[in-house]
Length: 477
Image (cartoon, rainbow, N blue to C red; front, side, top):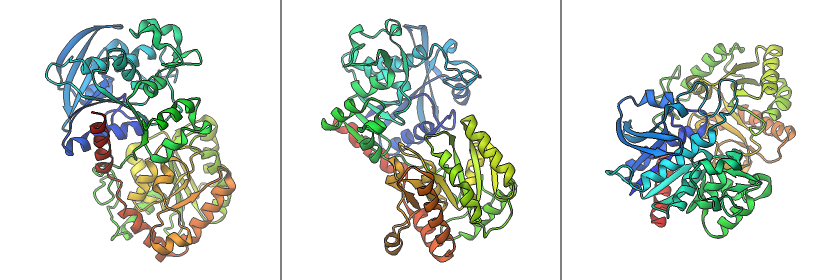
């Protein structure tokens, strides 16, 4: 079974969010399960530098001029790179310039990604041809449209990692992209007078997946659907929408082998976890005391992540003796508010702006509770890392958070299924109540350790998701 994953980033070569973690792990897990899997990426500088040994597979005329297709391998995974330096070799992020302004030609940059996927399905590489094209998020959404326009030379899967990001562009760009004018239609990729790359994936894919079962249900409702709920309800009725839960890459996230930690540990050596906590308290300038409950945030600082709720609940957390360590960047108002809290409570609140992969491991390894109070969360990986590291997740019951964390209610503590703390209402009162319940359990170390050990024993490896996707591909074929 030849499968081509089409995406814009891949960990550890290039990462701006959880999409990179998925693409960095899923293809390798599918290869281990017996599939013939490759990845198609734009040749962004970090990706090109990370795979220096490539060969030219083909050159082809496209709507952006003549482009090359190069091939190499990265840790056993075959990777195609779209060689168009005038499009991809730029400073800044893959999507924005250094002033955080979206590149004005993003419609061409990411339409080319979808177009090249279709060309591979048509036989551009005469030695390898995918039977399934698996497109990820809006950046790859046009792959499904190009396949449809060319008579479906391969079956297509479109995975929604976050429906909030839709890839909207002016309709007049349509004539540049070598798509049939008839596709600019409500029954196509038109969305309120614009081109939606996301809708292209949703409409033309043979099957849509999301990164958790609960999120697949949520996006059929207006509050989560961003205007796409009608289309998604139709796909759900047709049996063409499902959720497959993301996994954790055990080679990267494993406290017993994680070289980024001060001390490695496992469920039978939880005393060594405390060494990481002491180191984290020192690094963040907090009061060094292992008996104090240390809460953590590792996140983009956005309203979606519910971090305004954390600010509202913070005084109560601190009054009850808790500490907070935060790593993240994003909304300027949230950044300043957390910096102000750190200035007001220097021994209780530590803030590191930005994102550092190694430090994220040290925070999750050293904290006692990881806060993920999201308004919506397609899957969430942070809570999965928390479970793996015995850092109990405190989450809102939405999306993948609802699918992965079992609340420490009395009945769940009694039957041994509890793995964290879950609240329902999206407000600071509900979050504060969950924090109080966490502090009550913290005051009972024996029960806390029991929940930690159960959480660390849960299996969220990529092998499960890899097999589910392969079964889906087989059904489509």
